[in-house]
Length: 558
Image 1: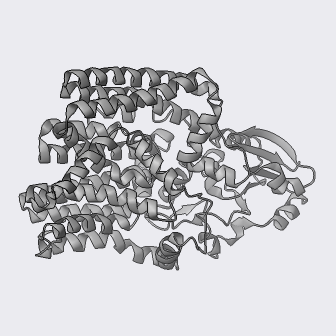
Image 2: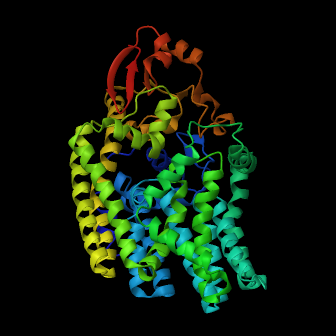
Image 3: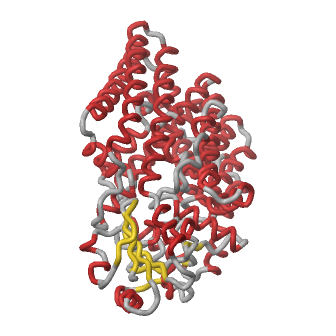
């Protein structure tokens, strides 16, 4: 954790909130802090029921302690990522020794997908951290025959559900139970499902539903039916603008996000199957971890709805399996495969650095970034920074990966296992500052901050501020502008259900109402990220363009 802390914690407050992405979550937490309770959650005053309250309560607490800001918001995810690294390292040390645990923790840190979300305001880092801690407690409790520790692990899975999704409390015990069933050791159930842990887990995961239903009637139907059952069936009553990946796209993104650790992890998983390792009680934790990793990636790939970050919960298990692979598998072939992989990545970065990599960048962002895919659906340009601004990061990454590939080649020739493992770790750790720089560059480029500050400077107290399209696409608008917007044509949104509530209906306008207000006596500011031909501004007379930035345009009627 001490090794990981500088990489995860440095420069958290440099860039403005990314939108869409971070701003919505920060604004929800700021409104929660102002309201002084835990529920209901709101975004610009509209009820928000898409995610549980744990992240927002932690963000609000951070704001109360150190003041609202980008750094305080990102600190919650960064500390959660540190917890995930620590829990993964501790479980690896408990199962296979201190060195294996150290490698597992840094392997998780060096997984680019995990690192990026560890510096980003979303529930994902917290979700992964609580899953990793839950597995550490539950699996170590099973092998040590400590029912209280198993119960604590189940309770932490309940917290994972409180962080993001009810699958956090249901799926991990299922993986552990399946591993036990394969070994013929699923009974007694109380061994791996001690009743105090089950009660705590279910209470944490579902107890808040009663409060949420009381605060926002219809919450339970929306969460269970619309946001899960109908979402999987692609038949939601309240769809948002998320654009799912294909199965091939998701698998590629998930595997590259954990590269090259997926290679030794896969080798260990295959070895477990070949040896029928579930018959050996000592292998139970490894079988459970392999089932979890394969289940998360495989079932998500088979699901009709997949987003780039849906593979993240598998990463701690992949890191643990990879660390064991570096301990047990043949060093020559493993180092050789890693050398080829890092060499290929270094070559790709070098070629992109030397040429015009704009199309390469657009392709990468289209596959890995939800905001880019949303922009395409809205008919607007992808809010991508100039290619030239990425070149230094790609050059540095090419050098780090190339150096790692050379060291791995030497490890393959000399069969020096330690050289191979630490060359891989060193190369990936050296890439992380470039990943952080690129992430900050994207956030700063498409942030709503600049246009929001134009509104703050120019809007009079009785002016109207309107946002066209789903408000989550500019979630930090109220944060930076200090003005609560009305929402025009924005019901296809995470606020779609909240828009049906009586207290929120006045915040949603259709095109006709905007046109009426636009022609009226009050000054109206309109922020839109839609292409001009698809925007309501094409049908409004006398609109004056005030500013452009972050893939958006700001207009005023006079």
